[in-house]
Amino acid sequence: MRMVATGLLLAMAALFLVARRYEGVHPAWGYALAFAEAAMVGGLADWFAVTALFRRPLGLPIPHTAIIPENKDRIADTMAAFLRDNFLTPAVVARRLRAMNLALAAGNFLSAPTGGGQSRIRAGAAELFAEVLESLDPERLGGQVKAGLRGQLDRLEIAPLLGQMLEAAIADKRHLPLLESILRWAGATLEANEELVRGMIHQRAHALLRLTGLDERLANAVLDGLYKLIAECIVDPDHPLRRKVEEGLERFAHDLGHDPAMQARVERMKHELLDNPALARWWEGVWERIRRALIDLARDPDAALAGQFGDALSELGQALRDDPALQLQINRFARRTAVGVATRYGGQIVTLVSDTVKRWDARTVTGRIESAVGRDLQFIRVNGTLVGGLVGVTIHTVDGWL
Image 1 (cartoon, rainbow, N blue to C red):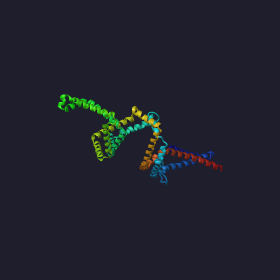
Image 2 (cartoon, one colour):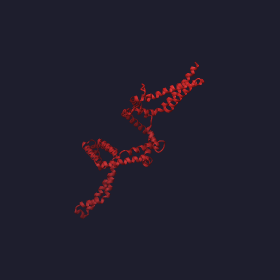
Image 3 (tube, helix red, strand yellow):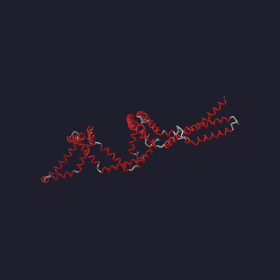
Image 4 (cartoon, rainbow, N blue to C red):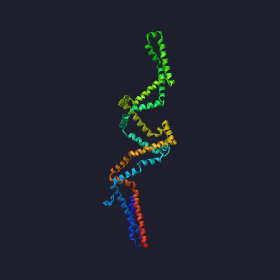
């Protein structure tokens, strides 16, 4: 476009020379001369204006030229202020997100993950995600994740959390299925090891009992009593033994939340577990399997979305798509999250923009802006040449009438 604009200016100069030579031959050459003369003035004026934005015309130190390179820092601050005032204020973010139904969009995407115009976007994002995971050092990344997890667990007080969970489970009777499962397991274990129990009773019985055969009757009585106790505990929710167990669990939950000695004991066990090298090796293996699974998921999303996982995502998408109350909650959460990010990090984001532009050299700034809008700027030169010529013809016509 720069060549087109310059070529048009040269064409007007050539037309000027020709019209100047043949001006007396015919009155029409006067109009051509006026058009070419005014077009050259308009084209040169706009060339100067466009060039002065990015550099000094002909290298001359003319005041108020090379405007963009000379004001690079001010432009960076202006861009940052524009971004902050028009995009990253909490009110603007909340207003924009209030007009968007993110939950519905996510629901439509998840309910039909393999169709629609999103496939190319999803494929590109998945490929980028897979390449990022593959490019990262697995050992270093795993170590960083492990260190971050270790730091979070170090700061987390496990005992009160476990106590609250146990108290909530007891209050909601969620411990009863577990207790019944333990009792049934105890009954099955006793039945599977019945001969072992009989042998232990025979060995510890007095010789007189063995001689009279009473040891066998004693073993049967012990086993029958144990079976009866387990059965009664299973069928009777108010059995004294079950109540004793529940009282023990309640006391244990209370100690976890309020007993400093119990809390210190749990914290000591936690640190011993975290310091165990076997746990570190186990976590590294788990992380590597997670990383490989994520890479496989990104490389072949259609296969990963098949089966139960895909069905679960589809059900989630249908719930998001069809439940207005759920959409309201999720949209509200997304809006609050985005507003919080804008409030906490908006200043850092605009500072990043400003500092990045300020670190660019003048040639980089000039090149990037000129590449973005340079074609339209050259159209300004073309339009200036043509409009100038038309104004020249108009003036020449009016002058002829006078």
